[in-house]
Length: 61
Image 1: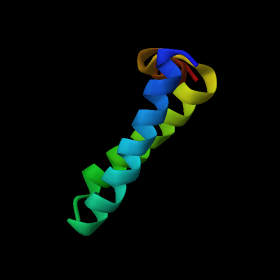
Image 2: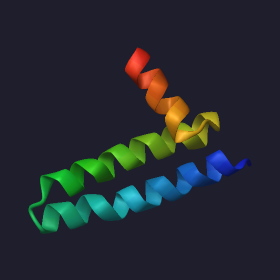
Image 3: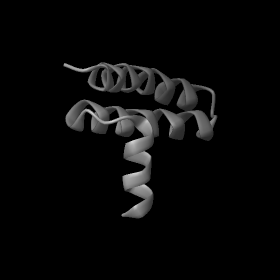
Image 4: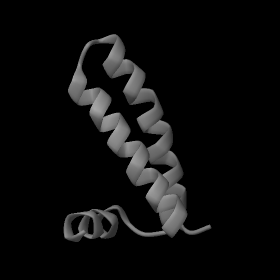
């Protein structure tokens, strides 16, 4: 397990906390950032890539 994979797991955990916090405070931006963090974390965990590498692939897709 490389550091990008570990970072991905951590991003998923952070996202899981941000999403309900944003929902409870009616702050849609925090809720959406939580969802984005979870998605990027899943991709990092699965592919072992950095956040920037994943963002570039998504932009070029």
